[in-house]
Image (cartoon, rainbow, N blue to C red; front, top):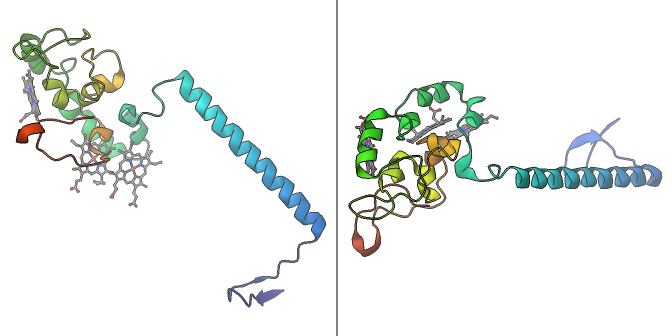
Length: 171
Ligand code: HEC
Ligand code: HEC
Ligand code: HEC
């Protein structure tokens, strides 16, 4: 039998739930709650085992590929996907001259003695972690990946301290 709910005006079958059914429903809801809880704990445990899970800037473009196939392939063939010294031989030649080994940790820009600014544009995920060992993680070697551009949290402007122009992406 269809009836109109006087409170919401919605048409539907009137809900006549007996106290026995209600207690079963309550128990089912409790069980569902437990399952969600265990799923959550499992996720946390897995995340602990694999440090890559949970860090947005480490999300691989392959994670976007299943739904954005065409864009993924455009990206894969682009210079954005090949921007690091591990993938672009021209950049690698200049990088080695200006900085040194792209597979070594703790490298400095030779002339300035500071963290190699090149990485802020050419390997932005490594730059966010202040790492210079580009083969340490796939996300470092990936260059300018999907989440480099698609993960704005805040706009920090283009001016650095003392009004200087800020180049590249800061963590
Ligand atoms: C499970 C499928 C799925 C995955 C995985 C996925 N997307 Fe999407 N994405 C969608 C769908 C569907 C839309 C279109 C939503 C709409 O209709 O506006 C979308 C839209 C977008 C848009 C456009 C938003 C807009 O305002 O127009 C961007 C940017 C985007 N996705 C980036 C990403 C990135 C980056 C990743 C990987 C980190 C990703 N997506 C992974 C399904 C997915
Ligand atoms: C502010 C961002 C930024 C910084 C910092 C930066 N680059 Fe680049 N670099 C780019 C962009 C963008 C391109 C691509 C330009 C183009 O194709 O028109 C590029 C291209 C290059 C190329 C040419 C690559 C090719 O295959 O044609 C070389 C070489 C290069 N950069 C070396 C360096 C070195 C070495 C440093 C550090 C001393 C550095 N870049 C710092 C953004 C930057
Ligand atoms: C260099 C920065 C950059 C990178 C890298 C990048 N995007 Fe985008 N993406 C943009 C910009 C900017 C737009 C908006 C373009 C527009 O509105 O015309 C866009 C638009 C999109 C859109 C919505 C528009 C559309 O054509 O459907 C999707 C989806 C998307 N990007 C997914 C991705 C995925 C997936 C990757 C990695 C495989 C990726 N992007 C890599 C900057 C980037």
